[in-house]
Length: 381
Image 1 (cartoon, rainbow, N blue to C red):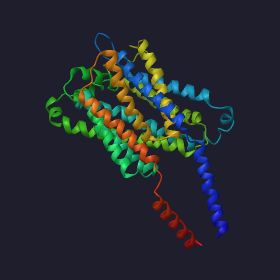
Image 2: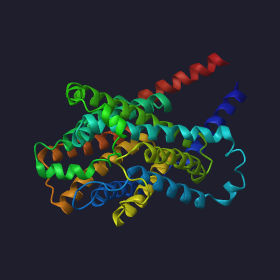
Image 3: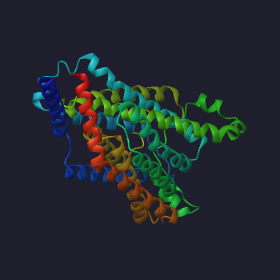
């Protein structure tokens, strides 16, 4: 019994030491969060600046931009792989360790293509508003796939976070705030192929089904995107000792392949987007956008490996608040009272979630847990 208990203690100690060895320090966590918020804000501003100044439209193919930033992330990851990891890539690059990384890449591609229906049935501002449901879907998928139990206060905090984001997105009828929200709207995908457009020309059907279909697609995209993010986190954490850069190389390899297929498909099927050149319609801000989006992807990989999806949801919310304030300063878009109320709820929910996360169990709970563990050991012996 004593030997068994000692073995169990050593195993638990080794597991704790292993996980703590890969945990980020509080200072590093703050640095990652600050970097992500800065990149998130820069991405929204560059998306606005990359539009044509006269028409206000995107003259480039967003699929080409995604293809280029995926290629850049792949190149950076390959260069950053440490020599010791390169010497031990045999098992890491075995097919059974490579193909799972195609799952998040495929999920992200499906996510992007589902934006067609969302932008057809909903206005961009409405689609962005309803996209906040991803906070809750991420928490649910995170609980199911990762298996980490969240406290009741943490669930309530995430619910308050969702309500806060909805209020912060709500323009309240302010045209000025609508301009700020436009800068936050994700880059819309290129128009569907001509035959898809022809099948959607019945405006009476769109008007009759618009609300329900649009909202159902938003929910579907939220679930699919959450699954992709949480599955990606699970992949990166499955082998903590493996180089993150090597894992990123496998992930972005599939990103390049899948987006290249999508780019070629649009070139064949779409008649309304000029895909004769990858760089068609680009300006200086588009090149900057590629670098920023690549940096965002690499930062998210760090978050998924050493932190988690809930952390990403929270820093994305803070990034949204920073973006609204930045666009208000740069473009003269005045946020409404709804924004400030929502911002207060977002900040409060983030604080409450992390406060409950850092709380230690009460002495009575600790005594109860010890008694349960001791009883279990006695029964086992």
